[in-house]
Image 1 (cartoon, chains in turn yellow, purple):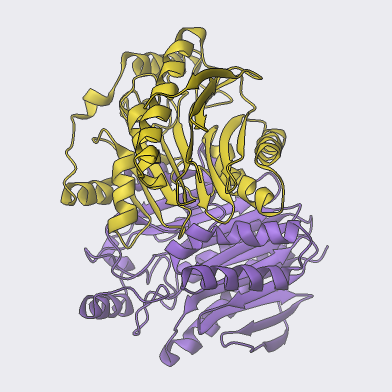
Image 2 (cartoon, rainbow over the protein chains, first blue to last red):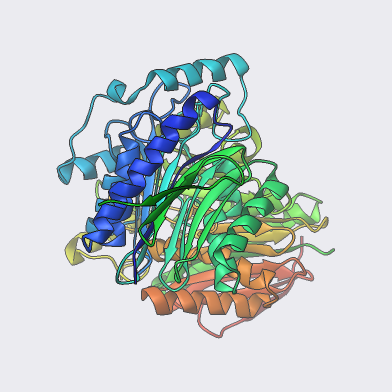
Length: 312
Length: 312
């Protein structure tokens, strides 16, 4: 089948000043991942490439640009899942690597375990040849501003954000490759002003990430604690397994979560047949996908832009 | 309604020498929890009390008696969930507290977050008045023997065990109280010979633990990486939501996981109507429940013992 790739750059009350940067970033990321698929790369390699592109980008809350915890530190987490055999790799409480998603992918391929955290995750990454970076090199001006705003405001917003943003922008990607295999990757810095040691939905399988070749793939973003209580990704997967289409499943699960838990989220979904679901209960969510070699993207409710055919 | 409490003491190839200790332990634990329910305690308080009883008990892989990682250390994790509002508390990478489930319960009530890990979890526990214990005080002779056996064998078994055991015995409890509220708690030391920093299914909501007053509650045990890839607890919940009874849902999800991922697990389930599901694809799983004031228990396939009326 023709490959498809869809990415998101985080759901939340994204301020106007950050809209263009996010739109540019998701379009770049989806092209980076799609290139891998067109060269017969695997869905796993493609979602990693798309997420790596956003982890490098200051406009997203993942890798460089991650938001800060109450101690002013970056603590990141990421997960990746193969729909072929349900293999999982995930990491959490990562402080000094630029690309948590690549370490997560290595956990998937090289560890008997699925999720590694903190010092153990660092030790694994070093053994596998990943290079540390100075933790302060991951901190952006925007992330500092977001923490300061949080400390002034003193409470969490309804999504992973500050009004000055910085907490918006968990990133994710879902792909189906030419062999019909599905993979999903998600990466985040969490929420501004989170407690030291807080683990969110992103490394929890079925909450931030889920992939099953027999059904489809989902990556979520938004208020992490609500997403994990609702098992948002797995809820969408189970609706599709029972015959609901990707669009309706994504909308129904996200609105179900928001109705039950009073916080917002978004999700991107691909069915095994290549149908796409995009839905967010937050004000904005940056997303982009390439299907039949055409690129589509958006960030507002009920907005779809088309870039036309992708030159690769 | 009349309260019900069900507990498990872990699924696996439990050696004969450990059978009686586990049967005694689950019967004690279910009585401890039931006592709370009879005194109009909440389902949350009851599942915590049942799990605390097993965390103290050397016969279970949780709290004292937890199995050891490759560095010879205890690293524990636990989660607790309220079916009333889907509130969650969970901790992971806990090294020096006897009762991880009580810290998890405090996360549920006192933290804006759902899951705390490592140093951050320790800091939270200390702020809330929990007392540390010397890490070596949590190590049992059986756990040492299990690690030694793992190091000789050099590979993970199909469940969380060694042949000499020690890795068997994640504990869990599911309760419905007189107000019809459901709660679930799960606590574990993980698997013998796990990498430092390995996080399993227990703190991942939807994998080790799930509760929803509108549907029911589930606690799982077995091969952690398989349970989290399959989202075992949430899979059982979703089957029940779609009309499958507790017994069939538990059996179908556990056998589905074992068929797809070739590892074994077990689960205990309560529906909102008080129907019970108990199923394990491993050789043995210790379990006990009290319903209509009668205590039932077992550990072998197709075995149910009855203790008769519980004096409380």
